[in-house]
Image 1 (cartoon, one colour):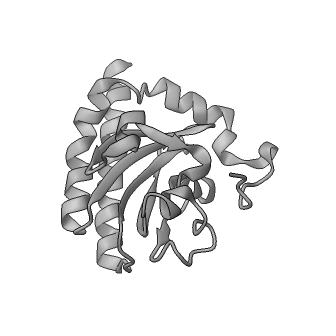
Image 2: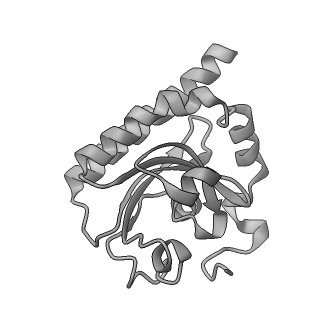
Length: 176
């Protein structure tokens, strides 16, 4: 699936070498990362009354699910999706919140296999931006029914995303 919203490769923040190096330096594939972030994903899912809460890391060719609550099936087994299917890539590229109230009509995602095949319908993601300025991925919630997200809910997500970044960067401080 070609991404009609992708910037040219030389301008695509997803492909930024320094960003990808930061992901590698933070060792976000270590098993303990899921342990320190899963409770935040569960809290987001619970507080926003949605089935899915995730901390996703956007790589150059894939999206890695670093921590989750409610994710099952092939995504849980694969621990991610192809990057071109990742809603989170928009939060990384744009460095801002990305919200989809109804994926069936949203221009950027309506033809996405996660929508057409897996039934994803709503999504709200906050970019995970490190103190060094790199957007690692997104702290997000998703569900199978269309819905809006009010400012109080977005604040909950922003606060939990900030806590996720704090925990990720605390690992860097301990390793240093």
